[in-house]
Image 1: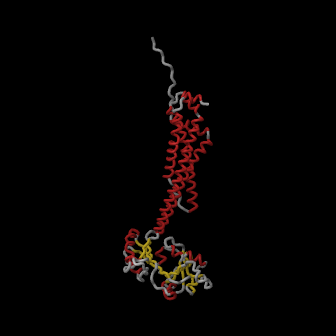
Image 2: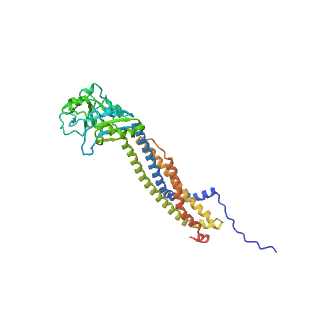
Length: 402
């Protein structure tokens, strides 16, 4: 006798990758508004991360360009307080001694004229000085500071001996004057011969009225002591020069000398921008996490609404793993679409903002790749539980669900 034939069982359906993606996207196409609202949280998080990193990178590039153009080899020497609490001035020959340091390319100085004020006219109260400093200047000051003139001319051998003055950018704005006009300095009239453009690395010059060393001593009682010595040195030797500047500028009392590098302030700005960017990046990550919770909630609702579909597919031979992959694919697709939209929005924000600020536009490729990867991970994590729940749903229970 022939053995009884076994009952026909449905073959397990095979789901190709293309079919899996199509089935996974079916839920998104069927409920587009829900998909858009759910992916919005992911998009906002990715957009925030891309925008923060892109704007931060553009700002850093702009600041690094500025530091490179201004140079980091400018050192400033000023009198300070010594160990016994005194404030001795720099020696008259401080500039000449500093120039003997081998790597020094140039050295110059300014000296504050004590008690002198500058006013627009002699009718203004002497106490209304507006904080403008009157200072004597060496003729090579502009060259050492790499300064530029906004108008007029710089001091020369002739004008340095006569009542002529060059105003810093802020001082000229406060006084409301320009080349060819006169200002009242310490009871005497001086002719404005030039206006300087703003100096990034020497902001004190912006608020100064600069006179020749000779005329300041002859007419205003200037004592000849330099108040600030500016040096430019070979880039590779800046630290070595900085280490010996105090002893060279004032050998008798090097503890009473302060040496600084003005470009350090710009470097500090760069570090502050990095810290602020990290804070905003954290906020973007929180938004991305909230978006992931939204995706998980959407997928749970989708499983509950599509129980009959799940039961029918299981009855036709679909495995639990295929049901799980279907809903996991849908969750990942939802997050990826949100991530791509967020990356596009973030790039648009970076481009517009950088163009408005006049910064170089930096495309944060790492941020885009990281954002898309993060959206995939968020989608997979958020969709794992709903997908497992869908895969474990018994066919009979799913088919009878109303």
